Length: 385
Image 1 (spheres, rainbow, N blue to C red):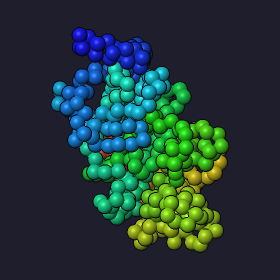
Image 2 (image 1 turned 60 degrees about the horizontal axis):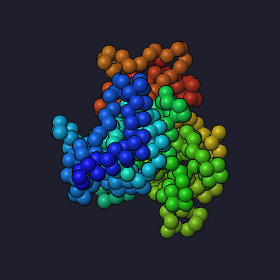
Image 3 (image 1 turned 90 degrees about the vertical axis):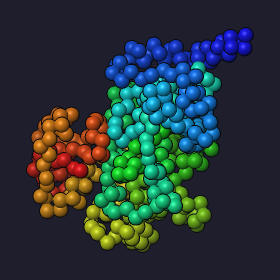
Image 4 (image 1 turned 30 degrees about the horizontal axis):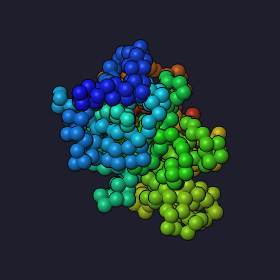
């Protein structure tokens, strides 16, 4: 009898969470047909995590708890138990996220809606910590300018990919910050928490302190340019090694975005005074170009900020210039590396925002640097390792 009641109760929640609707919508969706995102039964995930054993918990955040699980086929997964209970919104979010397939974004494998708290199943990413930990934590270590630019370029490419999504409306990350950026042992980026970060209430405002688009305070609406602002703060963190928000500093110095902008504008002395000294021993001109890009991303008005696609392209162009200051660039003749791209028209440049197939975090760019104000480069394919 108890089993019958439990089964009926689960079915009640399944219907309440619109699991059946989700199944129908996914089955008719192109992305689902290609990727076959799975609808998991609760008992599968219960077994995978040993009944959500606290020892299996690998993360806790605003959106919920994350557990490491092992499926019957031995696949290791990360299972997120969400705190939100708006089933209709979950259905829409899952359908949008089912389309994501980029090497720098943690991939959603499936979901379960048989419980009060929705469960999302993601690929398990064996990481060595977040960008936050590596910048400010115990395992923090000095990063070269080249490595910082690589990390920034991969974050930008991931966000540009989300913003170029075919889903309508576009996928906005909504919670870009160093704690949501994972790094593996080769410092390849994996962006987490895409899409499931609605802005609501004062608590959320506090938790995004330092990264929140100032326009959002007035409109209460997040846009693609909000992600650009947050990315600009992350980029400023990368080159200053200062936290986005420092509550213990004097009020005028608490917001990195505010201090950074004033330094660029010359209101509080020299920009070099707030840059990380580790990167001041190299190419100062390149550091200044990156700083200028960060400044444009954190402009007060969204319309004055570049798009994430423009940011990604500019960062890749800067990486080329940093690697090949004399213009002697190496070619990629591997068809496997280029088959995903369509040759652009003359005087155009594209960046890989699709993220298909390159597990080493490398990217291809076709560029005419004249488009972004740098020295002219011959239009060819360059493979960056």
